[in-house]
Image (cartoon, rainbow over all chains, first blue to last red; front, side):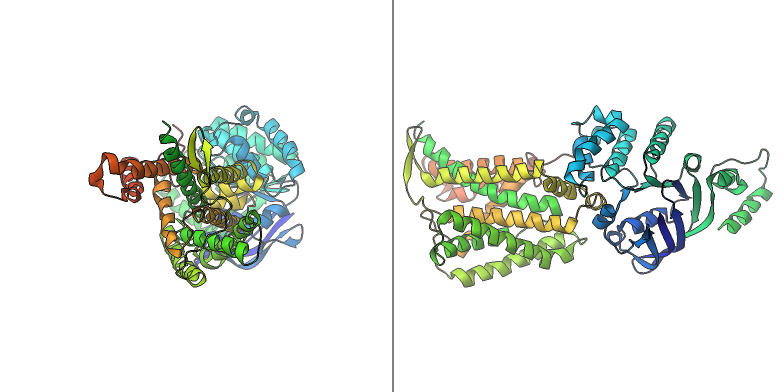
Amino acid sequence: MLTIENLEVVYEDVILVLKGVSLTVPTGSIVALLGANGAGKTTVLRAITGLLDIHRGEIRKGTITLNGDPIHHLDAPKTVAAGVGQVMEGRRILTEFTVDENLRIGAHTADRGTIEANLDRVYTTFPVLADRRKGVAGYLSGGEQQMLAIGRALMAEPTFLLLDEPSLGLAPLIVQQIRDLIVEINEQGTSVLLVEQNANMALSISSHGYIMETGKIVMDKPAEVLRDDDDVREFYLGLREEGATSFRDVKHYKRRKRWLS
Amino acid sequence: MEELIPVIVRGLGVGSTYALLAVGFVIIYRATDVVNFAQPALMILGAYYVSFYVFNLGMPFPVAVIASMITMAAVAALTERIALRPMVGEPPFAAAMVTFGVFVALFILAFRLIGTNVIVVGDPWGLERMDFLGARVNQIDIAKIVISMIAIAIVGIFLKRSRVGLAMRATALDQEVALAQGVNVGRMFGLSWAISGALAALAGMLIGTAAGGVSPLVAFVALKALPVIILGGLDSIQGSVYAGIIIGLAESFTRTYAGTYAPWLGSNFDIVVPYAIMIVVLMVRPYGLFGTKEVVRV
């Protein structure tokens, strides 16, 4: 179980980005973390994986525990070794490496003996990558690059996988494909924290959802409840009741929005 | 043809030494985006330690060379830890200035150790000549070519095939991604400096062989590595090798034939040639012959 309690993060010593965030990813589940741009979703992930300091960020308060052991003071290599894998926003594959090399770098902290077996596992999960093992990764399509980034994270055999906007910039069909792959990875025993803008996709596969706004968790409910929540439907899924477009509703929107945060 | 062979061999010998130095620059540049101006001082100290181990500690020459490479690897790694690590995240230009400061400091250290004397490294080749394709060539030139190429090949294979080499290359491409995969980026920086220091020591030994010997001022020979890395591309090891050979040959041919065919160039024009090539390259192809062009999806 990955637990964050009352996390406060400050950038550049003055910019308070997370104002007491708490969330839990139970072992074996998929949990969605939703929110608009700048809400602090990526910062949550950086805090977990020890990548804050290179962005001049710092954890001021709170704890992050992995199965009871605190991990918020660990640096990035130790976090990976502890079993937390991350797929960064924007895929961030090493464009000049081959597909094979990209995957092998993901296994940097893993035992040498496990590399070949894990390569096989990744190539079975993502057959498109197997066809292009020796190809330069930079020439893959966007969806293939996203699969490569996920495969790279899987090479370290993480027990918890953090995915930062895997649907970013992908066509709807490819998003569906990625979504099915996330479910498949989860079924193979990896717990997933899914950070998304695409709330529809995220809530369709997760068991629990958190909604963040300006550094706080403003809603925290099982995914199916969130899917049916009127405010979430309106603000995050873009669905609203028919015929409700007048200025009165815009004001109403503002009021409700304030309530939400 | 027979008179050409000694010229070519000498050019290859000098060129491969330049290549060795240039690879040291390239490894640090790729890992940390910093041009390491301390490399020449590391080279001189490397030559000094070979001499020290041979004459003061009585080690056999090959052992002394390896001991000196280890010493300089340690010195370079320590330099990185003390002087360069605090510069992580600062602009590369600032870090390059720090390396220049390190150069001055190590250069003064070399002066203290060597004084104004010329030291010899105690190499077994001396001025011996040997037959090569029917011509007489200096043994030392053959030794330079063979040793440099073996060293560069080992480094190349290490980077290409080994797990740590892969991590070093990943660090060079994207530090945050490397960190997120569990690579200890700081250790990779230290390692790249260590490799570079060891190569500098080897190059120092090769330059200090035969009649030349080493005085602290020989450090400026190492600046020839700059035209080499610019011709070869700052981030290409392969480019360093070709460029080193091109520059070495250009120098060697100019030295031999400038007096006969272009006396108006004056004597010692061969010292200028590498820099002339560098200026032309900067005008025509600023990323060098083998500099990486970014991979772009179209």
